[in-house]
Amino acid sequence: MTLSKKMYINGTLHSGHASVSIINPANDEAVGEVSVADGALALEALEAADAAYDSWSSTSISDRVEWMMKLKAALKENETHLRECIHLEMGKSWASTQGDFEMLLDSLDFFASDIQKQAVETLEDKEGTHTHVLVRESVGVVAAFLAWNFPLLNLAYKLGPALASGCPIVVKPSLKTPLSALAVGEICQQIGLPPGVVNIVCGPDQEIGDAISSSPIPALLALIGSTETGKHVMQQGATSIKRYSMELGGNAPVLIFDDADLDLAADIVCGLKFENAGQICVAPNRVFVHSAVAETFYQKVMGRTQAVKVGFNRNEAIDMGPVIDQQAWQRIDGLVNDAVAKGAEVLIGSGRPAHLAKGAFYAPTVLKDVTRDAKIYREEVFGPVISILSFDDEAQVVRDANDTDAGLSSFIFTADDERAQRIAKRLRFGEVHVNGVKYAIHLPHCGVKQSGVGVDCSHLSLEEYFTVKRISTALGKGQA
Image (cartoon, rainbow, N blue to C red):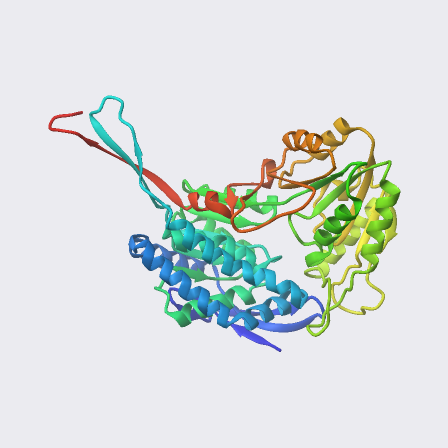
């Protein structure tokens, strides 16, 4: 199957100035042909969004919600096609595409509901001379740069709050996985969404990204990507005062104590590391296991790893697909080899699965005794590799967990609730999961340190798409 997709700009489908092939990393075959923009066309998309701002921001909440529900209905009608786009552009298992797709529906539902809870806030005037109200207004044009690992989920995090708040948006999906986002553009065109409200352009990252970031039009630059990309976007955006909402790289620690439910810990660690081939920003990167239970934990993790079914077949129950491309494969393999050279032991996996002759498949891998000087300890692996270290001292393992510039997600497994809460307060991460893991559109997703600024999901995310205006009115003539 080969799909042909155009960009969506100012209410129409646009063929751009060139096209590129999209390669399925599971079999190295071309599965799509997409139109691409240059910097000038990206600026046209921004101008279309800017022209739509006055009308869209002044559109009543009820009318905006009606458009969101119309889009949701059309998305549901096209579920199979949207999931096929993800399946083909990523090589992701068919089952995994469902969650990616459903987050887009959940986002439209949640923000359509949350926006209707917005109320004018009044402030007390101690002297009794004025009335004061705080009014939230759409911040302006939003530009969103999306990572490739969850094509529709990442779009959902930005599209929902932008539509609800009245902010026209220009979306730039990754050129590695643009098919599904461009398919959403087709659906926006089909339902007749007002021109300029949503624009979807793709093209070379630096040319398109720099043109958008450096323009004075966007009021908010939103990014899901690496820390280095975040820094670059901020540098380019410094041509004018802008807001930033960025979910960046992670280096998640997992702390497993000697009283932990080891089956639960193994299930969650393996689930996050092998779902989406480990290409998840919140996936465990450093697994610290108490030495008293380390051997038992190794066995449980190896058993689960061995059972992972790797491949690409829509008609089979596949657990894990490929990594995104051969460059990613080489980077992951280099991290594993570096870890082994510095003392780590491969318990299972590494390299290419024996039964797969082509594609960017990396075998589910478990390393033990990873050392702190290994690159995989410092760098986000973004692949299906579990790195395990043992520990004995609580205070030291907390220091080790915090010894990273990243600060996105972290995990604690222990039967001692007092210890869990004590450690949770000391971990310098935006999210701490205790004896489980939970992500949903109503729960804030945020990082600290070099893992980003701002919030995705929840009512806190919606706040980023507003500015606050104070209107103070004197009571009576001549009041100052």
